[in-house]
Length: 489
Image 1: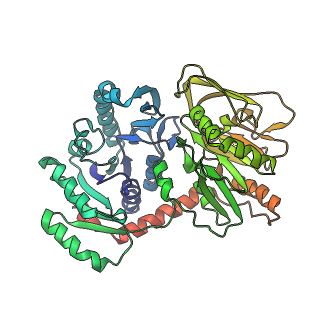
Image 2 (image 1 turned 90 degrees about the horizontal axis):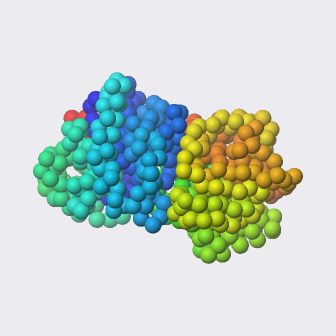
Image 3 (image 1 turned 30 degrees about the horizontal axis):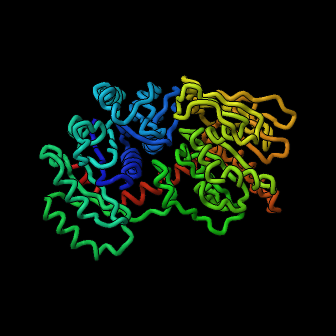
């Protein structure tokens, strides 16, 4: 395989987005492309068709390349769960929890072997090119000796490497020069181009700086990418700090509680694609207000985040909001929070013991050692009967639905979720539920009816078609501002 590596001067420089764009650009040129990120740390994840868990960003990159996501595209995934520990997922399967100080002692050699094996596997699948993504910065001098993700991979593949910088935050030239100074000579030799990302200004004003940079380093600037307004899947919750819903004059307002360990908030990108919906991420310390719906999202540390809701008063605010006629939905960890209790007797997710839930749905959850990770295809009972709904499960909780005449199964598989009789409290284990266009519109129409709005047309495509259009638009914009010939050498 030909190999291109994308590294960044900092986190959030735009590596994931650029890799997705390059995958689509090269795929459109007739090449069979695979993304790759040796080790990822993220709470947004996806389950492959074979039941393996990978970073959601690598799934998006695979879709951009027009191929199915495989665990070999992200062989190591670390999911932080508080107290300086992370769950370690290798080749799609959870293998244990480990403290940061112990991770490399236990997993460095294993990890590098798995990375090499995964690259060999991808090479054997007749891909023409691998587009690799780094993590954070390749020049963290205290971490370089054990960095599994950046220049170690680039050297292994002898990859043409692009260094991308976020100019919107300022200090771009210092970031580039500082990064280059801290790389080893053999690493610097692999850097074949700089990419300036998130540029908002007039390029002619930037040009003298670009000329100076090229003369100083002898390395060309191969692209200046403008600021892109579209909402794309975010890598982690830090991206939510700058998230602004484009639909400021929408009919419906939906509040998503920004839990400390929020996970899989990519579930709500389809809601943001609806022009009639405004999605706002609300910190537990913030005022909840009076939205049309409140969503409790997934969490890697459900009990700990539930305690935060109590300590900040958000738990009480949600109950008061519901009493006043609101609608609450919980997804995965948020679903567990809605129940009577959550027990983690072995402290698998951090907090050990049994804890009282919000008491809004009749269910009890126990955290178990073996994680459930699988794709699902079910049929809906609510808000409309008979709709096909596709999604995936990722959870260690085992939830027991308590007998009640006041709740009903959401789907033909009753283990995946319930709704109360008044349809004011919804809960599901199904990630990706809002990707299903007809189900999403039916649920939104339930909210719209309460507000006296006309119903939306429900016979719409699933979100993947919207995502395809976004990826196409992203590739168009990036390709227009990149020197692809220079990148390919």
